[in-house]
Image 1 (cartoon, rainbow, N blue to C red):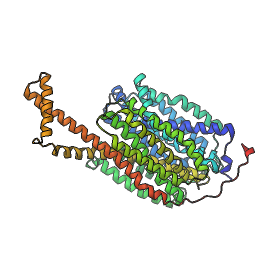
Image 2 (image 1 turned 90 degrees about the vertical axis):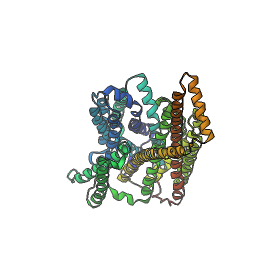
Image 3 (image 1 turned 135 degrees about the vertical axis):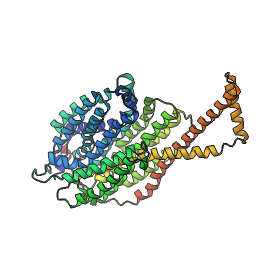
Length: 526
């Protein structure tokens, strides 16, 4: 009955849901909104591109460190107090980010903004889940999913528009009015559950906190900076990989043996949560991986602006938003979550294979439309059933603990996805280039004819024969490099799709464990 006491009705439920959605959107939009503003930050702060990349990395590290601790912190300080404090931290450091005068000052503020923001996403999910009666949890996750799916897509075009029409500090300033509104609404309407607080005399798991920071902080750094630093040829990457592995081993040991752990790993005994946690990782891999690869392709190979690349994803996001209430109703009618997830994975494979087939050095905008609509349908079918399945048999404080696990794994899945795709694109590009070069025999009449045609073109522009021949070889080399790039992006789409295709039969084999039947809610209570 503790859980039932948090259920809201009527206008109060609408306000609580709206508050949680605003906070979830604030956090997720900020993970991607800065990407398109990095060149402006670099110029404005006199920083190298490698230095300004830390603006993204610091926020991600702050996020991933705090997410697993959110359930414990909510219990220790009270959910409403902790949520309100996190909103205020996020808002204050958004202001300070916009006022930063040096790159490392901005990086420090972004890390602290990420500490505040990490709590917003997970706590929002818990608040929305507990504000709805059990039989309407599918619809609750549909509403929450709007923020999670829309956020990464909304960030790039919004960031591009603000950067093009104002200055980069305004990508942080727009958080301030929304943060203040969310803070006031939290104090007025959000309730703390009766099962919090923890007793103040209980010992704080300081060692667990330190080991968690070592583990997730090191891992996130390796994933974010590994490719840039040439992976294991770099001593820092090697050392941090070792510290991440050791941190994980000792963290798990500590949490399973300590009386009051900072992260309650025992909640993973719940079979549905274990499955949901794995699927959340795969979802994050696909969501953030596909959001990363499409703008990268359109900007580096097709020459689009950041705003154009961001706007390309809008129709898919609208499709997902349209799907959310439909999927929520299907879940309420008893359609098994694993069937919907399997269909979503097949649709995501279809989207990826479609991308594999249409990529060329000059693919037009229209070619992407229906492919991305298919992605939107797939994401709608994946997100809500996965989160509903993960939390379906949890009760009381376990819901917050479960939401923390799924949130962390979705974030880590995204980090792994971006890191692996980056490595794969680089290596496949080198392999394709080498393969193409070996096929360019100068005794091949087609190759010889191409060089002669290019040379004649340059001669007609006033170049002498020797210079024209040299430029013809350069032009051919550019064509080879461009084609190798296209082939590597094609591989990226194909392998991403194959991951989802391989996982589909395993999802169908999952046996959903039923929780206690949801209590009946009288219509008069509404």
